[in-house]
Image (cartoon, rainbow, N blue to C red):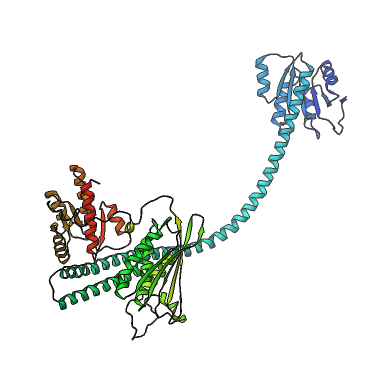
Length: 583
């Protein structure tokens, strides 16, 4: 149906613009069932329809018309913001490529040549109307987005004003916090410097205290093998006893100071609990026998699994508890117990006990004894000497291990100390605890005096004159040939010029430290391609990590001052025997 008057559209409206009635008739017959049709026979009427209140949805526009051709109509439609979005399809008898390009360049969405196929026109009209719907939706969405952006900008302006006010307030707070942070950072740096200063102080104190004690113990040992009267021998025994007691006190004070200053770190080594119990019992039995006491060991049969922990510190805990039991017991036996309380995924809860038949501890004193420098009897007339640090150190070490320590005791009925710690199972052998490795002890004559052969030659690097003389005398008494030097530089020079089987190296020396000298000697070995010479550190450096540092620097073993000479001699023989075997 052709319309000269507009009706409320129920269908999409098409504007047909053509000055030939026959052309219009053909299009009307083909399209009127699907669309509302508007007719314009010239350009002016077409523009009026396009700008009316109900513009068409699509325009089919002829090009060859009088007064105003189709190109001009299209140009005006696209120039007007009101009509520029109406799709225009040229329907024309002009079939030239240049003209088609011109029409599309002006903004037409299609260009159809006469004669044409009505089915193709219908399909193209449907496509263009569908695209128009999508463009209209997009335009609507863009309009909504624009409106939303506008509202958002208004809110942003409002929020910006609020935020600026808040920001100004925060800047003031940040400035205050910055000042606080700077103060905290300065405090942290100061704390780190203080911690390092503590470590340096403790390291120096350890060196300065252990070095003279080493001389006392060493020369006392030399006196003990000399021909003495009974009275002189008793004096030597008293000096030895006093030296051991002094060293025990120094060790405990230094250990306590290391823990308090957080300079003590637990290691993670592979060991067996039953080995640890056996070794600790054997060592404690020597002291117990001097008082007429016996030590009995009660072990759970399931303690042979390899576990990971710090066996040195766990042994230290047990040793402190056993020494405490020996000190406060006058007769009877002391029982060291070890059992597994429970299992967890990947490990065990180990329960250790030390039971004595001593005087017991009053209930009111049982917590006090784990405090620093405390004993149950704090009177001026107390019978037992000591710093009171043994139990404190044990309690602090247990705490570091994440375990528990407590005591059960009654006056006159003895005491039982309990320790529980968690230990993970070891997945492999790892680095076994050296104290109870399965290696056999080296016989005295092997790699020692070398009976019938030239005695081993030992280079001793020690700057402290008393210790140097003492060690040289002891080593020569064992049958070894000794050349002593006073610092690391002289040690390197002596190694270059002479032939030695082993080097005993102090760490803290002038000119060149033991670490530097070891590095230089290892470099000379590599340069010359000579055999590896064993180097044993003999040092008063007894802080946490010193042993690991010595081994990491290329040394083969580590002996701490004051030297236990049986330990030193055994270490020398082991290293010499390894060298003989080419290990």
